Length: 157
Image (cartoon, rainbow, N blue to C red):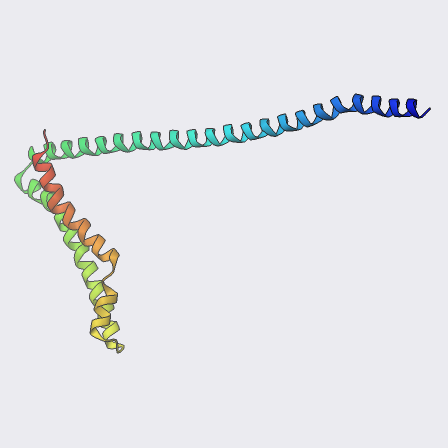
């Protein structure tokens, strides 16, 4: 009797063991599929971002080419017109630069004047009013007018 009970339990365990192993295998398989799906999704996101950046770069280069062509067309049109039109056209870019730079200096001087009138020490006012952004703007203007012109001068046409 004990042997038949023991045999039944042992037979039941041997019958359930493959089902348990199959269940564990399916669990691991599903976890693996989920991980692979997550990795594929991440890969598609990266591909999409790369594709968008690639399209943006293409658009930017096309836009720069269009701007260059517009400048060439404008230069040709101005050179064929009256001399005073060419002179006014040549003064537009430097005129706007001087105007904006003058306004910027006026604002800076006004801020410094208010700070000095409110009792600030002149050394501290000067140090705090000239920031990294101010240096960046000055460098941008100088680069545009001097380095950019030097590069344009030596470019192959």
